[in-house]
Length: 483
Image (tube, rainbow, N blue to C red):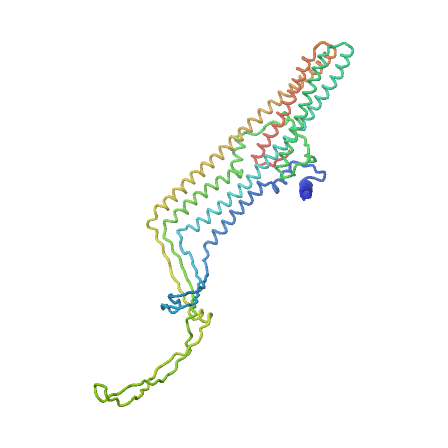
């Protein structure tokens, strides 16, 4: 089962890569960004947060509608209890039931409902901007990982070339050593340098694997050795100078960046929260209505009356002492008797209906300063939201200024490194000739070769750092991220 699950997961990952990449399973930067906008977990989570805020807005609007509730109960009573129908005190077993329904309509709530709707709408707008901000953050991370892959790829080519050159030089030195032209330490020094070059090559491969893994994780893809990216033509920094000013970029970004818009919307939301809290100072007026009915199995249905005749026996005496009774005559007694039968459940509910309607007014007088403290909390939250907005602007300014300064510095460093590479390559070729002629030893040659490798590495770092910083500046100007 485990093997089957892993096979399914691998197939799903392969299908995802085929879906996101081109027909040759090679990812361009645009394809990677577009795929991440649909599949990155952070992006999906931000969309869920936006959905939550949309539900809150809808609920705030529905809170203005009437509230209707219904209920009922059924109970068995033994012993003394008050009959819910006749309200008489009974001492017997009985089964009783009641049903009720009520309606409540808020008429005036201190404008809290209207302000709550306004606040929730602002929260929804802020969540929408924050979702866009998350997408922007993921896009920047993808560009970083993409450029890291390109940098590692070129670094592999450079270290592989240096390894090849050292290997060739080692082979030539071996020939000279066997001929007795150079000492054995020359061979040993080059062997040591070849091992160093091999280590540099492996480190470059590891750096490429880490960069590829980082990009695949941003795309929410399982790791695959077949993952490849397009290698675009990146202009040289000395041919693509920085033409923008950091302040100009900031002026554009502060007007368009979703993170700044979200922070400003949070400030407006916090200000509206103050109005919501202040609404508790006002009286509250609501309309209510209800209907109910009752049932008791002891209730009887009276459908008529009949006259009854009975005879009452009386004894009559001649004397006051009662010693000589006359006889036992009977006297007619007339009465009225109720005719009743069982009272069905639903008939009782229909006949015992009670209706009510009323207005409820609540006037806040003293509640332990809860309203005042809630207003103070809301004001503090507003101040905190303003600080967060200022921090967001300050961070944005610092990021743009840092990116601009880094771009200019990288461009200057690239120009200097390019000149250094040209000079180091000439010096390296000359050193090869002198080493083969026995003019210099391998230690001096390795120092010259090390200078060349350092210059090449600096050139690559300056190139890709400049490219990345330039993309940052383009991004903050609202330009599409592309290479």
